[in-house]
Length: 157
Image 1 (cartoon, rainbow, N blue to C red):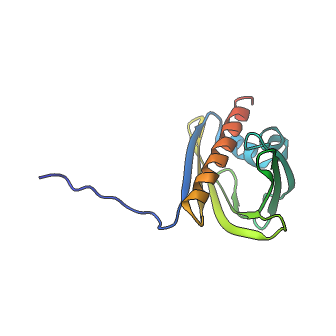
Image 2 (image 1 turned 45 degrees about the horizontal axis):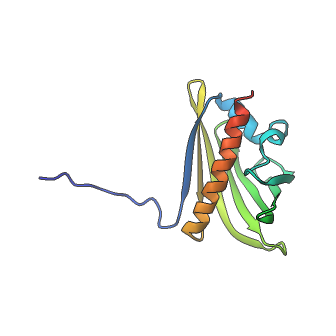
Image 3 (image 1 turned 135 degrees about the vertical axis):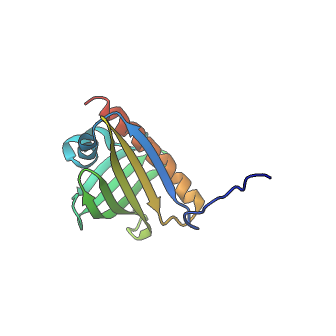
């Protein structure tokens, strides 16, 4: 008799989950993700974009606003609000693109977990609330580019 195979569906909506094992301590990874003295070295992402952080206040209720520009895609703006900041384990924030007139698009929720694994850190990014699989897949490209740059920066520390 064949073994039964089971599948579970976490959510009917498109969900993005990316996990990376980083060669740095949990405290260093959290600090490099949140502190301005680190951000200026790696946050010009994704590749091919010039990024300006217009506002970044990493605390519950604090907000961020980012302007990204590339020859191919023009100017893109996004903003969000930090819902949870638990150093050095977790960040939860909203993520929302703005159109050319400053109107808010669909808000998503990003949770980043930082788990100590000996002298390394497992970073897990989970983003929910996408309007479509295409939107999720586009964010996957951007986040993976961001994480590549972040990992490169960590290697310099």
